[in-house]
Length: 265
Image 1 (cartoon, rainbow, N blue to C red):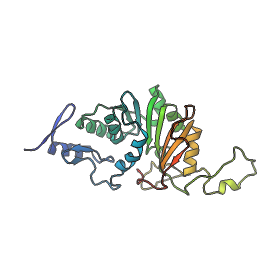
Image 2: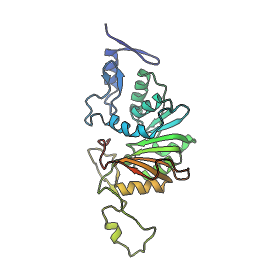
Image 3: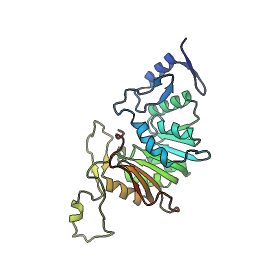
Image 4: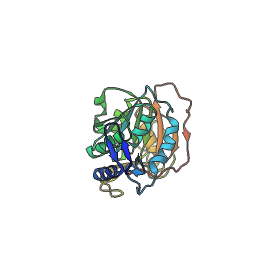
């Protein structure tokens, strides 16, 4: 007899579940729906979400009961589900209704009460509230106006921001003066000077890859948005707090290895 999986408001046999997963595809997030059914078991990046979550999870409380979380660019909701399982009240937003349909379905199957809304990153200020924890992962480099969005996102962070972006160029940072005369040119030629690379057409086959920062540039932008970097587990991931709050036990910045999980696309 075909096993039955009971969600929050529906019952599925394994065959029904597989058909629904296929109907909602293709999936970028590989989510375990039980009974051996996964949404993207042959993902070209492998198990990268679990690899990233292994780092992220260490910088968030194990018990998030009573905490609010905003998951920006939630896609099919892998991170939203992890946070809800820790007890948080989670709002996931995405600009793509197809991803939200996947997220709602996966949450229902896994019996998780998560709110999802269709919303563009540039409109997050319309939420008119702060969240204890904000995830802003795999979105920044897809934005044509990234710093404009980052400024808005930073204002929503109550305790911590988990931030991830594609990074290219020479790694590491270099001291930059607070000011320099108009005749200064040499500092701009340093490979570690804060910078962003503009993608006019496509990168990795994706026309929404607009801006790719180097490591120094990303850290400078996070600081300029009013955030303090408290941890840097690997090249593409930063843990930040509002610069006006009391420094946490993680400060000064804790840096991880120069490499980490494979980047999201």
